[in-house]
Length: 172
Image 1 (cartoon, rainbow, N blue to C red):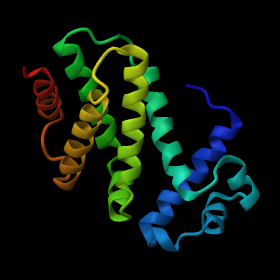
Image 2 (cartoon, one colour):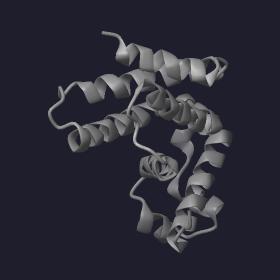
Image 3 (cartoon, rainbow, N blue to C red):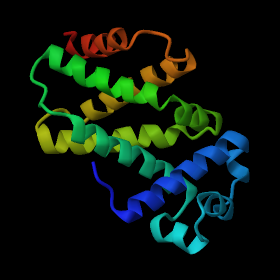
Image 4 (cartoon, rainbow, N blue to C red):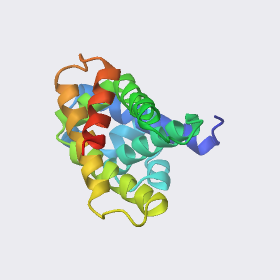
């Protein structure tokens, strides 16, 4: 996946924020701190983001785009869905440190909001006739399981976690 120059700048900003979150309390980190750590000016920060929270949301969006880009099939059966959820949990585990930092900063609601919005968009696009509460059920399940799994240091095996989620969905 190739990136435009502004994507590199955004990447530096995201990286700077997470590095600072590793060292300092989130509430004490200023935009000036992030800009300095990223090697940019404040005006450049504000060209791309309105707030520190927008940086985190961009982080989720970026990883979601990468995830979607790597998907090479449309899931059609239980095993396909297990594969998709396995890929989601693998990406989550590969990015465990940012999630730890978000949890430490009490910012996990940004993750839940992001999941809710994306599940709703997906359902509206792919399943407009489905129950309007289903996207929240799925996003809530993924959120709660991933947060508990994070709490347990992602110790349980990924495929077992994916199977648990899909079995809960397929249970009638």
